[in-house]
Amino acid sequence: MSKAEQYDVLVLGSGAGGKLLSWTLAREGKRTAVVERKLIGGSCPNVACLPSKNVIHTAKVAWFVQHHQEFGIQTGPISIDMAGVYARKRNMVDDLVKIHLDQYRGSGAELILGEGTFVGPRTLHVTLRDGGERTLSGERVFVNVGSHATIPDISGLRDSRPLTHVEALDLQRLPEHLIVLGGGYVGVEMSQAMRRLGSRVTLIGRGPQLTREDPDVAEAILHLFRDEEIEVLLHTDVVSVNGVSGEHVSVQLRTEHGPKAVEGSDILVALGRTPNTKGIGLEKVGIAVNEKGHIQVNDRLEATAPNVWAMGECAGSPYFTHASEDDFRIVHDNLNGGHSSTRDRLIPYCVFTDPPLARVGLSESQARQRKIGYRIAYLPMEGVLRAHTLGETRGFMKALIDPETNRILGFTAFGPDAGEVLGTIHVAMLARQPYTLLRDAAFTHPTMIEGLKPLFSNVREPALASKDRLESAQTGHA
Image (cartoon, rainbow, N blue to C red; front, side):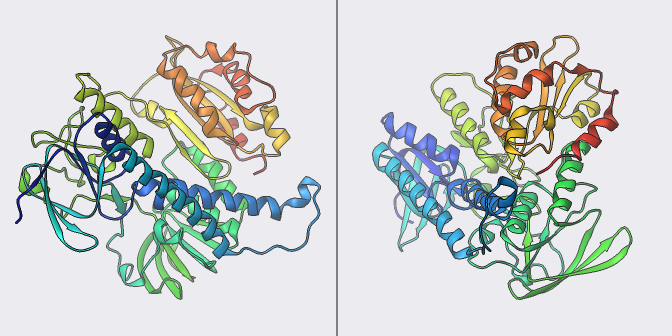
């Protein structure tokens, strides 16, 4: 092994936390190297968050065109050009990669493309993508290697060469009948997008509902999917898969009502994520992982080996880009003498169905499980005038209120611009303000955020009208 090149900072993986830290520390004068196996900038700009939302938006445009007559617009027949859908997405990704490369050049951080493996304390052996090898050592090392889609050990599944979200976003053809395994967030986003682009879609979920949200939220999404003619099979286990995705697949199922078979052209696996921590030598250098494969870290994101930190999904942080970015904030602050921690941080998230789902803080189910008292504020989207101007009145908003302090414990929205409305709630919760601050605010008319006034004017005990809430969630138009 060649003599190790010395760096102040060595980052393995260029995901959200890793790249921000490398650019920042390099600009602060630290000699910094980033080892990246494949995706410059990590998964988000290449194969996950941003390209998926690009395709999802294209699917919404297709939905608008298909429903043009509702808007008083006359046009002829339309067709979907999946090569064009792919090209739009690819152009965006290429632009984002260029932006990342500019950041590396501008910051002075050295980007090294290759496979990195720990071979000694804070030391990596790198097999370079273009041939050759290097050995790098850092005074401080940061691991940000992310995760990949889990392919479970189901008979015939691997042999069927299934799609994950990565391959699905690169399709330049339209699947005739897409079978989606998994009723979580990736599964529901991709199911709706592909259906709107013209595929027949069957979604298979192991659990009793779609997503892990409150039952009224899950029920609202289920009714949306049924209205859009997405077949949903819940309480269903996959027994085996035969065939090859892209040609023909047959999925053998075990349902509540007995065996069942589903035939399709393609199969997409959306059954969770696995950390990319195997095979990179962590065990050789005292970097411990837990039973799920996440690197063990404390609330300052310090690993079990000296001067080693882990960030993002590989460290067990919430599986969102903004959580990894917040990991960067915590680590950087602490490197400069701060006292930041992952304890009790408030991480919001959105699911980009149409309408989108957004949540921050406690759900009703979580509050009940933890025996936390709350009052409820609930408003159907039909009560928001902006929703009527859009013709998108499906869904609802609800908030949990602390009965003693009047602070907001949690907020869920399923409706147009839910993610944008979420930001205001998030800030109010961070500021530990009572809900009355939003109830009494003079929001701009007509906007979706204006709906917070009637929402918070309707605070009551949760036992009241739970049935009405469920019925309201099932009404309205997409």
